[in-house]
Image (cartoon, rainbow, N blue to C red; front, side):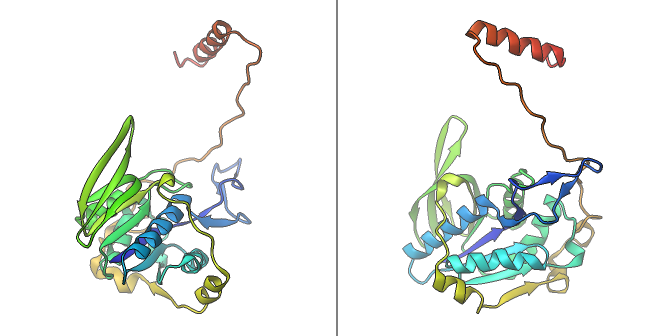
Length: 261
């Protein structure tokens, strides 16, 4: 089984600050990490590899050259190959453009299963994974919390739902989006770290992918959406020593004050 995991290097949101003048994220000096849901996807892929003899795990990331660090961490966890999708033409891409670029990259690879994280902590859109599946015409299951059965031609997965869950049998090739409950990521091994820096990170640039791209739908200029403003929420109000009736009245009064009700 050939498994591909799409990951994203994101700023550690615990450390993120907002520029008060521009309303944009201050990224300088902020540490970067593998997006948590994507890291769960890596672990799920490695678990599948261990269950299916002869399987391989390839990790793919779109980003600037420094995303190399995230890819090497994935290699150190046990992934076999890594691809960095990177070009100036791809800069500023929104979710639609990003999914198109990643889909073009994935067309150059062999895969039975593609795993992405549910969503990235720097955007929280949960759009890229499903959009990749759509652009590759793949059956897909989102919000996967358990892989119950693995076979050469299908998987059986448990999908988290609002008030319960779904058990779904899906034929391969397919795409899954992972949530935190799916797996607990393993630590890198010392040997894995050493070997990760001996492996080649393969680069897929604009020239490599242009024949499979919508050229007018990549990068900032080709993105249908853009971020108008980013902001942080103000501190909340803590109500202490109130009865249930008093607490309800205080909340209703505040909602009326803000013209929410």
